Length: 232
Image (cartoon, rainbow, N blue to C red):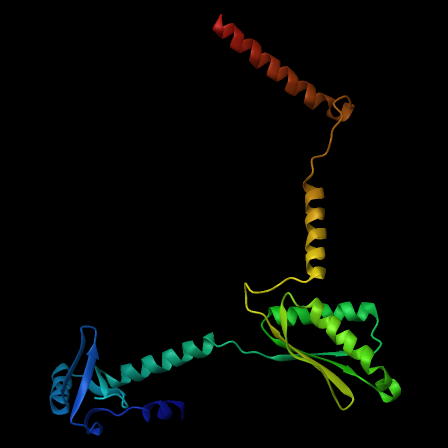
């Protein structure tokens, strides 16, 4: 079915019933009468394929039609592979979500956004908890603020029935503005790395290292004496 759809997109040979066509190839393009273009195709053992019917005159190529269809199918497959499939991931909160649960869901939302997906976060108000809708709005606004380094708000919190929704979309690479929370986290990680890299101070008099340090000093003195002897 897919191949038939591709075939029906193009007219070939005698199906092309205009007076003249523009033939394009590696050497450029030229406008010739359609009858002459058909003769050229027969001489080369290929087909006259109309690739742009709305142009004036229509644009054609001299190419084997089977090869042309294969190229078109391959090109469509490559374009489809390049298309990014964006999914909408849901994050659900209660109006009184505790901090541990909040951080857990914040982590997952960050992963979703960094993978290129959208996030639909919502607070579900059960029964009389609808009285805490302001609290739910504050929670969603905090959520958006904590994700501002990787996500942008598509719509502000809005109440729909018993649910208050917030929509976030991933930021494009290179345009992310890091939140204060993210900056603090990175600063803490950097300090930890620097602490690990810091050299350990060694007491030269300790027995455990005394041998190594003493040998290093003796070797240096020996090399110095040898150099002085050579000068003499």
